[in-house]
Length: 251
Ligand code: 13P
Image (cartoon, rainbow, N blue to C red; front, side, top):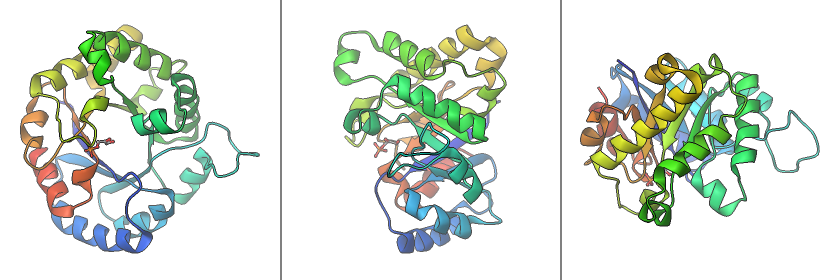
């Protein structure tokens, strides 16, 4: 049995002050829910508040991006070592919004994944097809290419620290959720690609999340799918009661 991982991706939401208040609410709703892992991936400036607020709890904290270089002349960027030094455990890499708005490619995603893993971070690697790619019937090819290129050079041992989030781009922030069948099938395809790269044992243990308009209403059914090992949740992770319902569904 794979343990489910419920992760919130706040995107560009909440100030440090709002983070403090939210974490208190989240601690109350998450208390005693020990049958899944809980992560909140927050803006860089909120990391400190999230880490302080969650100290001594099972709620883990993640960043939403990391640079691939260890240090240097990269104005505005944050390195893996900086995150580790702060006490951050997770980092989201390759989110479709970064691919869409900030020129992220599979090659730069791969460089970030390797830098993060080498520094000791756990990676939530986001992949997913565009609506037109699904319509063209090339979802499996797209997921295969992204998984293979994004994980190039990552060892089987390092795969213990990699979560793959399948996020169909057409379902992100649109309220248009993948059906349970679509989510299960796509997460299964990703698991098969992982098996082709690392073998069945690694693939059986790999955590593959679904993300894209997961909410308090649809989470329970999505999380019942055999290949769906949790969720990466945007909008619904910003309200503690809704996020709490999703955490409950993962118990
Ligand atoms: P929504 O849950 O708001 O659709 O966002 C999903 C997502 O992009 C999580 O990374």
